[in-house]
Every structure is written in C-alpha cells, then in structure tokens.
Length: 176
Image 1 (tube, rainbow, N blue to C red):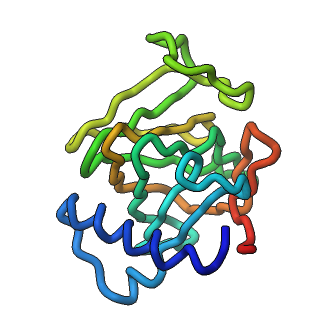
Image 2: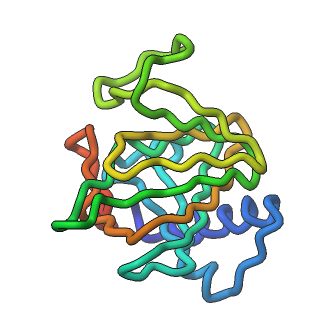
C-alpha cells in the first residue's frame, strides 16, 4: 500500500466509527492502522484498526471493515510456557460481521473459498452480539454488505507472532 493512500482510509475509518457512535480523539484518528496484510488488495483483504491500549496483560481496539472486506484466516499461538495465546472477544457495534471458526460449515459458500481458508463454521454478529474466540483457534472474518465496526477485547496482543494459513500474508506489512 502506498503511504499516500493512508489518510483517505483513516478518514473512512472515522466515518464508520461515527456511524457506530464511537467518538475518537484527533490523536487516535492519526493512529489508525491500515493493514493490507501484504497482499496489495486492501479493499478486499484488509482491516482498519484503532488500538486503545495494548499491554503485556490485555488489549482493547476497534476493528473497522469495509463492505465485504476479509481479515485472513489466522490464529494467536502460545508465546511461552504458561501463555496459551491470545483470547479475544469480538462485539459487533455496527453493521454485520461473519466470523468463521473450526467446525462443520452450516451453509454453502456463495463463492469459492481459497485453500488458505480452512475453517467454515459461521457465527453471524449483529450490533450488540459478541463472541469469544479461544486462544490458538484458527479464525477469519468478513464484513457484511455495509461494512462493520467490531470492538475487540483480548488478552495480550502480539501481532508479530500471529500465524496465518496463507503464507503470503504479512500482518505487519511494510508500506511501499
């Protein structure tokens, strides 16, 4: 992603956050992360993130997804002896988000799933609904037709340690 594209996507994230009734400071608006996962197709596979707090004990952030946008399949593995990996709760604030987890798919997909998407049990989150993803669990998610805003509450966050099913994905992809 080109650095010149970042301000426009950050502005768009603010629009979605406002739709969800989430007010942010100017400093927070400047800190919104635009993640294209190194695939170069942000509007299809990407995520806008606003991190409120991230310590060695817990993390809170907002996830903003454009219409139909996908966050690729990944898991948050154990980091050390007693750390089982990141556990996270997604709470939908606006729009709809489909969360996919291990288990038997409940429906047929309307489009072919790439081989890098191996889990298919669908959990639909609408505003006010939430779901807790256990540590070290493969998952991916996709916004509905209007996009989505999801609050994430989790144990310690360590993005560099995330394991993506698609080996081309780089969580901390550099800017071009």
